[in-house]
Picture 1 (cartoon, rainbow, N blue to C red):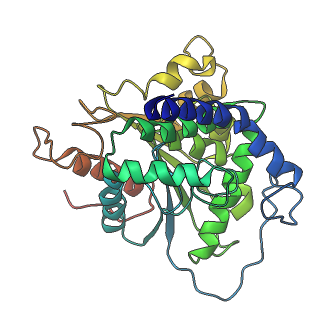
Picture 2: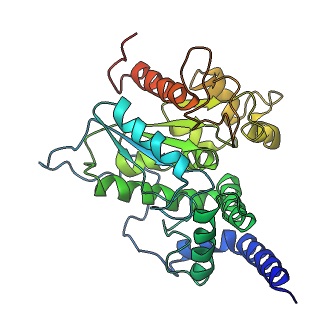
Length: 324
């Protein structure tokens, strides 16, 4: 068999292995077979918060960024997202922006971490660094896409989303968050990170004892029950984005024919705001992070998204209002 044939066969095997073990990682973690063990037995009750201490709060508002399916580890996300994350820190005064949570692992372990397949993922990461459009690099997207599906699954999703919520809580604590002070937290999920942010939001308010909001940028989301426990969800989407509408098509709870679904009740109550951005695409030229393509207003696509995020945060009273 040729080298190309071996690579193709190996890639298929890795893909099918990732699909097969996608729910097993969550179940194994929940069973205590691996990952850190914590002593909190009940993760839903809003009464489960740690006492307030005398240490100062690092910020008046925290924003946790959850990357799209191109991420491979907590410290390795696609380069196109880095200027956007930096921009969030610049436009949101008093906000601590955190971007070290890997949303595609129930234990926050990157694909290049201590895994059986870590060596293969490191090789794929090197290929992606040389050529972001390499076919092998698409395996990262496909593998993480399975985790998004697990998050949205009503059977395995609650376990998966619990693990991610605890990883978010641990990250908040590392960055100076003080449990019990009611300091608000916003989860900003890009692409597949939108669904995982919404799923984790079912548990996070109880884990930190504070209000949680969610911003989706091009997010592919189900009618997740997490919408019941958040203060608000803002969904920013582009009219030329073929992926963002997938959640609306695939999950019956988002269809308008079921007005009593979790999603449609929140929509009717005004707890979900849908914000069309214009002719934005999901990938390639004209995407949400494109800092070259301009709109009639003169803003680049990335500047426009950052401005929308700033405005919704100001409207929620979380940051100061930008000058007109």
